[in-house]
Each structure stands twice: as C-alpha cells, then as structure tokens.
Image (tube, rainbow, N blue to C red; front, side, top):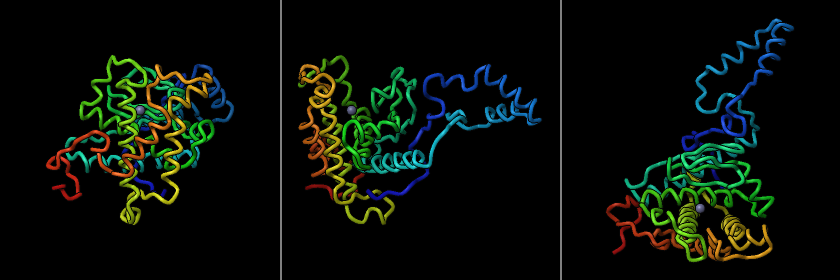
Length: 290
Ligand SMILES: [Zn+2]
C-alpha cells in the first residue's frame, strides 16, 4: 500500500486520556515525590507539572508516551480515514458527513457507553465516531494471522461503512434484532464489509499515489481477504470454544465476509452492497449510467 502522512484531521487522539485510571494522571504520592525532588535538586518540578496540565493540549492530557512506530500508525489511520471518507463523499455527495477516528488505549468512555480494547474497533452511532485502539492491529497480525496495511485499512473502512449506514438510516432496523445467521446484525456487518470493498476498488486505481491518494499494490487485496476470512463468526467461535454456533452469529461467516468484501471491491459500486444512490445526489465523478 502506498500512502503518505496528512494533517491528522481525521483523528481524535485520546490515547493520553483513555485507559484505566486515566482520570488521575498524578496521584498524591506522585506529588509528594515531585515535591521532594524539587527540594533535593532546586528545580521546581511541581510547577513544571502544573504548567503542563494548564497547556492547551486538547484531549491528550499531555501524558502521552508514544514511539515513532506508534506515531506512524496514527498517520496511517489518518491517511486511510481521509481516503475512505473522500471516496464515500464522492459517492454520496452532501449526504455524507465527515467523522473522526477516536484513538484510545485499553478502555474509553464513548457515547455508546464504556468500551474496552478487547471488544475491538467499533462505530458508535451515538456520537457518530469510530473507536480504535492501535493495539488491535497487532492482534490482527498475531492472533488472527492477518498482517499487512491493507488488512488494517479494511478494518477502518468497515467501521466507516457503518457510518454510511447510519447516515442513510440503514442501521435503524438493527435495534432490537436478535443475533443469528439470518439477523439484521449479520446483514449490516456484511454490508459494511462490502462498503469497505468499494473503497478497495477506488484505491486500486492506477496513478492515485502520484495524485496524493492511497494506491494499492499487488498482493494488497489478498491481505484484506485474509483479514475478512480471519474474523468470520465461525472462525472466531471455533477459536474461542471449538465449535460453531450459527444462532449466535453477529458478523457472518468467513466465507460470507470474503464474499461481501470481494463484491464491493470488484464493482466499486454501492449498488452491489444493496445501496442505491441517485446520480443527481451522488456528486460522483463517474459518468451517469444511462
Ligand atoms: Zn462492524
């Protein structure tokens, strides 16, 4: 995958303020230690801390410990979210509203309640944002055996697919619906896979990278398909319990997820995902079909 960093306009960085105990960055013990340090060294550590807390570092809490590798991942998520949203915007025109990916660590409070990293990335209709712990990418590689940037990009695009469903009111039928292989939940998840695929189609067009966009390289499609196959309900259930329970499906089988993503990726068309967009509203650069 060829991509370049942008301005992080698609990111809401809450890595520094999330996590367990994030609300208490320095306990009383810490203050006492800092006070002693100040006394011993002659440097006023306490005011350093106070200054830091007063500085207008929005949302991060100013306590963020990161690495160059992690910062590159932040740039990556931003670049993917930018590209995916650009593609969806061209399809939906004014009906698309831009959103952000909230980055967090371990645990976070969203408009959809408290969430932990263990639940995986998710879309919250309540605040219309995508939530992601960057650690999930390691899980994808190590636990699910689906490495690669396009595998990770597929996950982000899938969540933004839920945003499209929400904006179009398609997710309303999900509420109260039971789980199971024929549930509305499975249908919506597969549709989100398909929508992610339509972005894959866009990103696979030649000459995009030169024009400042993401461009796929040979082998990338296989990465996304491997990821889709890795996180099917049947496989996850088998990993967790050793057996498959279709009555508890929420996302569809591996085969269904691969099929849904492929459908979007080969056509690039929302219609292949069961979404009709009228040409007059689409704002699409594609020629209107006769
Ligand atoms: Zn989903």
